[in-house]
Image 1 (cartoon, rainbow, N blue to C red):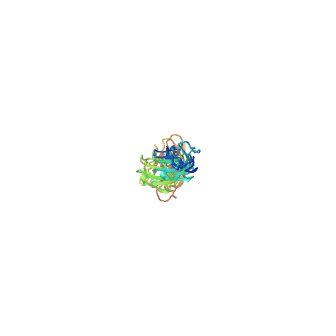
Image 2: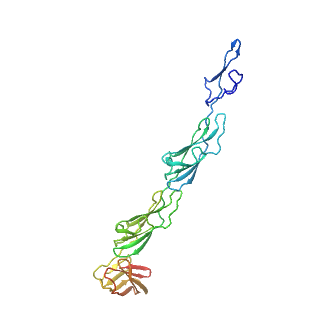
Image 3: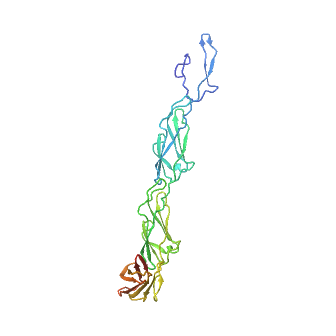
Length: 363
């Protein structure tokens, strides 16, 4: 009783319970007199149930940072207007979030707002996509108790490693028998982050593999360099299984591979004996060097198959790939004849390279 008293004609009572009046919930009144009290008038209470607020009508999810590996951020927004009191429902007084749950949800932490804010921002350390059990919940608070939950599945999509590099450049740097050198170049610019892939942070080469590839060793750069140089001890041509791979690294994991077949062509190397006629560098050109071995004085005879008169460039290259002599000769009636006289050459094995037009071969 908060207004009037037990002997008043009228009084007001406040109930702390929000339940509806049941059969035993009653109030009684009787008259008093000098002759005693009258009979009792009993009435059941008329209280109806006052419910907690209904669930929020909506729960908005906005991506904030979806492309940051290990720190993806999403914003969750409750309705800005709280529902008012009705005859059967108490007025909402605030918000209550249940932090994300589930395998992915458990990696989330609130970093803006709190469980009672209208808007919260959550950062996830997982890059996985949201599964069925990954959800967030929201309810209104009221003096009648907390309201009904509004539950929504998280909207996180998977964030993976970068796509494969768009290109892989292969350059022949030194054509020395038993120590041929090739340079492999990945793109200089890293791909930026997207909504589905993290930004690239580096490179990862898979060293050449295959029958020829297994003879290669990295001698400049390393598996994380943009550019590497590989030396091959084999002089055979690259076969189908002879390849090299490069991929980007990122905080989301390594990206897809860019694979390229090795570009090594067959190389015939002269080491001793008599004049040799050889089919070289996968062309129709045939060449002879004689005498071989020699003291720096020898003749190069190349059957080019090109009848037009043209100037040919002839180079002598040592085992380190250094050009130690350059001269010219004339291609005439389908052949080049070059007389080399260089007694200053040191003892060793040399490669003779000759260029006709834009075609270069060696012997």
